[in-house]
Image (tube, rainbow, N blue to C red):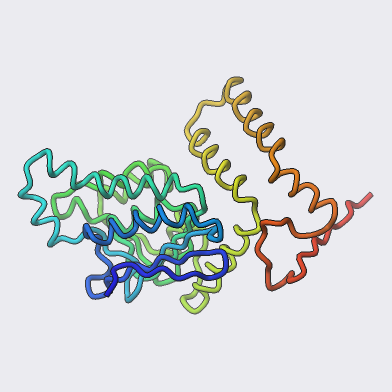
Length: 276
């Protein structure tokens, strides 16, 4: 049985963590499979969006404790190299040039919550739960900490990283950690709708926007930052993708890159004239 299943749905590639018997706990094999999948899908022009999902009763229960017990016996150099694999995966997800949606059902604990925090959008079902239990077993949520702080803010991250208490999906949405929270029966439909919406955008524009967000997220607002953002827009505006996007808007048609939508199969763009 493969530990990671890749399913294509239109312009989206759904990556299913497939270790349901251990609640999709992350081990060396699954981490490597995810990195390999992201490398391959970056080169696949037909794939515009990535969805991270889990088989079975959980999204991801975090690191495989059996594997951690073995890794605890490594020397310091080997231990750091081993831990670094997951750090590289999180960075790969966070900086991936295509949007990444976390589809969360059931528990997303420890490293599983880290996968969610590193993603761009989070869609959870009502029953989903997040938790950082590391301190309760003498561990530290170290590699996932930068992504958690960015995703939920330092003050909330302090609470959940230190206490290890569970964070229900609805509260996660209230805090801004989850973007959408829906009944389980609507989860795949909601994720699919978000993926289709993302596939309407220019792929180069999405990649540039993700890079821009990383740069401005914690940056001080200065005149230099204004020059940087102006340069980003000028470069995008001069590109072939923007020219096609503007032309398609004026011609009231779907741009060449956009995936057809069920509610707009012909790609007609309906523009409302502003009221006088």
